[in-house]
Image 1 (cartoon, rainbow, N blue to C red):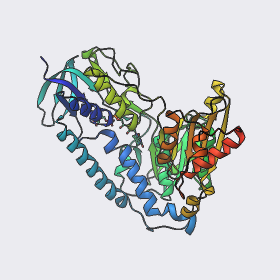
Image 2: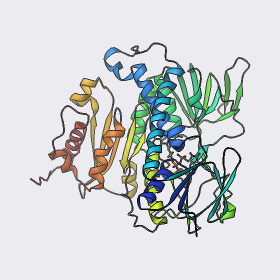
Image 3: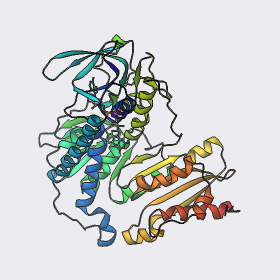
Image 4: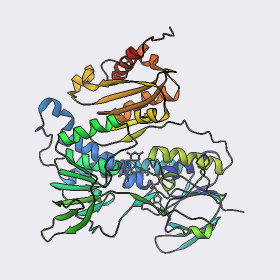
Length: 468
Ligand SMILES: Cc1cc2nc3c(=O)[nH]c(=O)nc-3n(C[C@H](O)[C@H](O)[C@H](O)COP(=O)(O)OP(=O)(O)OC[C@H]3O[C@@H](n4cnc5c(N)ncnc54)[C@H](O)[C@@H]3O)c2cc1C
């Protein structure tokens, strides 16, 4: 009756993982993608480009070596926007090739065009040449992601006033930059450009930032940013943003201050990319931010054969979680068993320095009234840290005093987004402080910080139980 078992709109992490999952289970699957190449925001304007930019910035600036050779050390004296773009293009090409190969290997069909609903089981696709195609499907997975929020009062010009998608196309590195929005994207780019010697000012109307991260970690992070002269202005809003005749941009803040800068990055929020979907025809409605409501376990919308996953359903809006959501949604859609993922997933903020976290923060432990103990290790206490010339970096473990279980792991510093997975595994496997105290870690490694933090907490918790 239908042309396809599952049609997926969008080829980002949620869409591609969902499509491949359904195809692996023998279903006929089509992915519709409006972009030139598959991959979604994640590959083309979000995760991979920003992380490639970060890696290039750290390598060319010699950032990681400055602990030894001083703050003036540079691998390349004049870093250009072209230097950054070159590596980006190579990386993106590899990513897309792998994705296209995955689709081909798993017999996932792919159509380029913009999809919108005709009814709950039919989509109309406008192809690049204007041709219209109607597609019917037993189930539809909406994995359309988000696009940057662009308020009218910001004079975007694609050159000096930009959103995070446009930032990747800049022709020159700015000497100064104001980043509006201290969310994850704003913070990542602010710190990357600061590592490239751009004078960065970060502003946000909220008086705190990264509220979902353990406060002690945010304090350490903020100290490091201020220590290298990044200006952080919280509780402040830009009332007026104007392009000046000399090419610079002027910001008038609500506290009366005036900032003049080479470039403004507006990174205050993203909207669900649902406006072109003609949701009404399918009996669906998005909220004021373009997001769709779903059952959090099945990712089913209010229309039974339509599913939504990834950024379009809101928090946590990560590529990593989007993939899992897409996989679960596809399994439910085709009637396969879909196990719920473990409760705690890691959150990675690829700022300079990195932050990564999994489980409960100290603030959440207090709110929930769970008696706890913390163990702290600084990377400079590890031999690997000495070898790498690290004088910053902090790992914090939080244990329940009652069960001795690890309930939270929080890291700021080099390699945080990789290191967190040790804590994540112990946490989700319900491990206790004894795991860290009794196990041997490779030496010299930064992972040894787990041992130090485990001993730190264990000593205070007393009565270390040995299972040996
Ligand atoms: C700057 C930045 C940095 C990020 N860094 C990280 C990170 O380090 N780690 C992490 O885990 N996450 C990161 N993210 C978030 C991550 O990119 C998203 O969580 C992820 O891309 C969401 O995947 P998705 O499948 O929901 O959709 P997306 O990746 O947004 O893809 C949606 C796709 O749907 C297509 N589409 C939309 N509407 C239609 C239509 N009508 N017809 C056809 N196609 C359509 C779009 O063209 C797009 O290709 C970052 C995001 C940004 C912006």
